Amino acid sequence: MTDRPHTLLAGIGSPNGDDQIGWRVVELLQSRFAGIPAIAVRKAAVPLDLLDWLDDVRTLHVVDACLAEDAPGSVTTLTADATDSDRGTMDQLLSRLEHLDSGGSHDFGLARVLELAGRLKRLPARVVVHAVAARQFAPAAPLSDDLACRMADIAESLYQELTDARSLARAVAAEPG
Image (cartoon, rainbow, N blue to C red; front, side, top):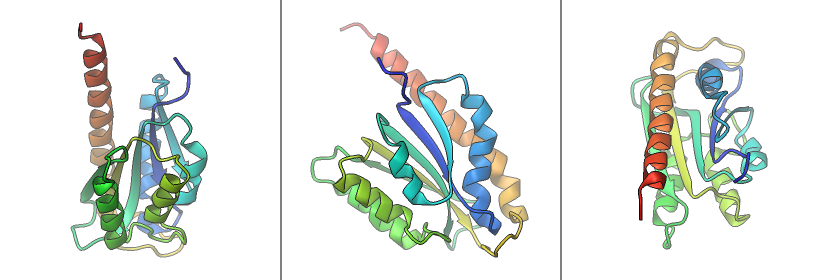
């Protein structure tokens, strides 16, 4: 058994307005996951940072701001199984990311980084993107009130999702036969 995390929760962001949401959500979760060695929590300045953190990661969760017509703070969750033999779910995820413009203020967007990780054979078996609808990305602007009000709920939802998944994995592993 390895000491390395099997799940990586990464918040992508910058100090520019609503683009902070990925960072702020993972900051709320860092202490809650501190005692769970199978889950790593990190902040990325650019999606490309993810490539350095994928060793032994089986499930990648990413929180990132996106330009979307949904209400600010609403979350679109996209999930793909990279082991899908026809790559259908991963291709769909990449296509949806391109349409959500999840690159925000990043030059090399999340969809391109995940595609590159696949080409490099570094893509985790499961990828889950939590794209938070955002509106303003002005340099050095504060997080909008809409996103600040939703931040704790988004963090709690992610905590429940990741801890429920761990409970299920332990139960399956403990089943006889």
